[in-house]
Image (cartoon, rainbow over all chains, first blue to last red; front, side, top):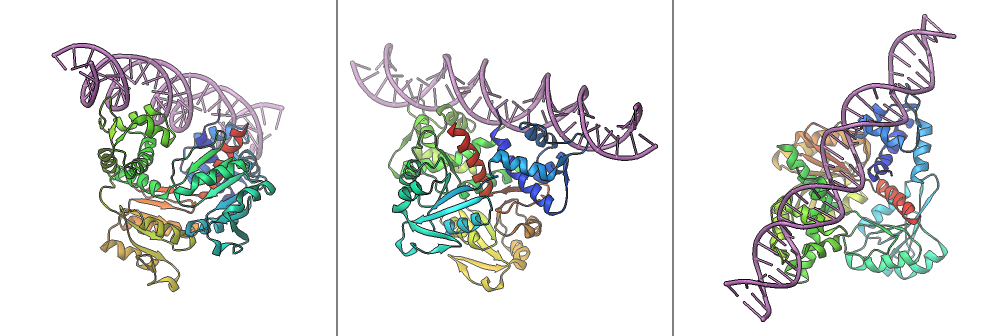
Length: 205
Length: 205
DNA sequence: CTGTGAATGTGAGAACTTTAACAGGAAGGG
DNA sequence: CCCTTCCTGTTAAAGTTCTCACATTCACAG
């Protein structure tokens, strides 16, 4: 059984390794990687060891090889198809950001406001929310990103589910009946800041 | 010693309780709260019990009272002063969002692009990044939110630290020397999506 | 070909988090 | 005034995650 925390850290390691590669480094040590990612060296080794020994004893890890291995583990060695629902301030910022990540393929964005229909954010076309179900039948997607007000979230989740989307991230906290088998994750910046504030207060003492 | 996970959940409970209050509910049961927040009832009780017994045996928790208690624990019963650095797409979206949260007081925003100086996002004025250090001397802040490209993050962190900011959230992953005593938290949407994708894949089987 | 140095992989155990079960006490009915 | 009901607060156990220490093994030098 692989800890979820390990998976989260793999993402972080991966980004760090890409920067290392760009810098021309070809071997990575668990100690250096650990320092750069803010974790302990033994944890890095343990995390990687869950998936078999990638390293060379006495030398470290080959950067290239490790990058490919982690990409494989995370499943981002092929494009992940994403649909976005809600193209407000936050939604369009996310849309722009995700288009810069090579292994995300943003199929389309959907908004309720008809003045936006047909327009584009970067390369991505904005469509009517009403089309979402039909769109998914012809263009299957793995993930959905929701940035709309809380009240509409349940409906969108249901439509996504019927369309075969298994993982959804929502930027609005809402009480949702999550279909069995779907994974729903909330990202709420206010909550994150509250948590941060609590930790900062504690640290001070 | 209080688990960090407990603190995170308190934020979630709080939002749920606010909705319950808006709906006119005046008692909250651990079982209901748990169901709505997607955790177990005994965990809710355990989380709350770390801070003393708020509940009434046989009846539940008084919604009003519990809201105030949690606000007190999180320290959001008084305004938290925040500065924002970086007013691009994502930055301005966050800026708008945070202004809607009553207990965050956004003191100012800072950007490197001089065309933005003097303009406003909502009520918040955009200033030059060069003014940040001086601004903080006159306007102490608890938290900083950074939404600029990775390369500039270290400098901003250092300036914030000298200005007395103890907690920082960055939307760009970067390798940072974090000053002793500062709390730095990264929020990276691509990483979150990768993690979500992994969980969704696993779920399917 | 052998010895040395260096960093990985791993197993035991410590630390932390969650669950489960139940003792205890408040409220309300009779 | 007592009894029943119900849900909290708590304790012990189970489960999970992380750390530490060290045996292992690879690369390279002599």
